[in-house]
Amino acid sequence: ANGGSAAAQAFDNSDTTGWGNNGSADPLPTELQYDFGSGNSQTITSYSLYRNSNQPGNYGAGTTYTPSAWTFQGSVDASAWVTLDTQTAQAIVADAAKTSYSFTNTTAYRYYRLTITAGGTGGDWVNISEMELLEVSATESMLHAQGNLRLDGSFRDATGDAGNNGQILTSIATGTNW
Image 1 (cartoon, rainbow, N blue to C red):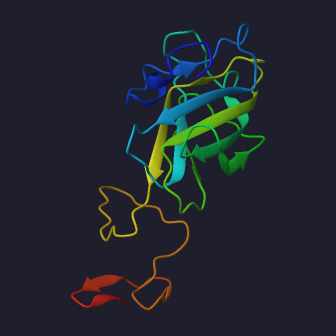
Image 2 (image 1 turned 90 degrees about the vertical axis):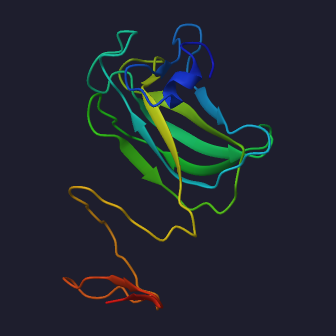
């Protein structure tokens, strides 16, 4: 991250801390970058952003200091970057639910970065309380849900059939069936 508070605070699993640029010394565009470390790469296929208006820094409520346009990129060497997702005209409201973004990616990268090109009405000042980078494993075979689960899209059985509305997808020793 350039200027402002430490980038690590956006990845510390605490919504009472966060990252923010110093809009006076570090005007947009600005970057928030994550490094999985030497020898570690992940195939990220979605990310989420959250803003808490009560964190230190007086970033306030609403969408004033939220990013509104950005690119999300991956890199194996922090030099050559591949754009994985681009967003414009976004409104991440402080204290609302996390806002998630999904995309197709089949390459494992060590580095990921969010390059913010526009913010809310706060001008060049932007703030993110938490950013999650999520990887969907091709070998993952279980879904555990507690409470309500909302699915936008469909589940498919072992043959690729999406089934019909109201059917229950079951798993058996030889695969899944409706």
